Length: 140
Image (cartoon, rainbow, N blue to C red; front, side, top):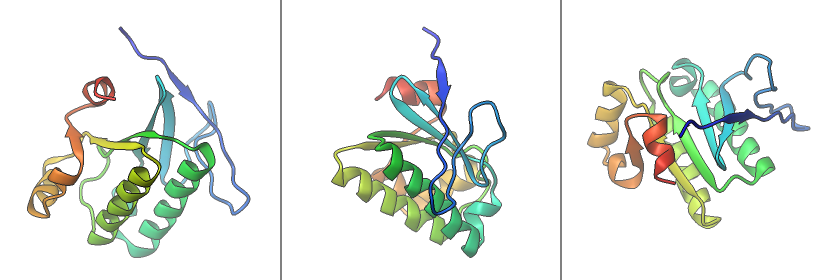
């Protein structure tokens, strides 16, 4: 069965924004809803590495989650060729936040260097990781 995505638009008062339907994505991520799951895709590797961009990305991500009250999140990390320890820390923060609200966060499309980092840091035990979006979406 094919899944149909619905793009959402949100502009928060603090300047954080997410994908506008039919328009280019925000600065750091896009979001679409597929069968009740928020599929969030990061747009560039730089936002995973540079400290100030990690902070901005985290603000955008958490603002989106708090505004939309998502309980099921799939992070597509295909565009992340590398991930800094600061970004890994934000993912742990996201995991804890989702546990607090009895939600689920899963990851997909990790490139080999990122997957290696997850294995070394044992984050592959913390997060459920899938090879692609369709496989991950079936597990929600």
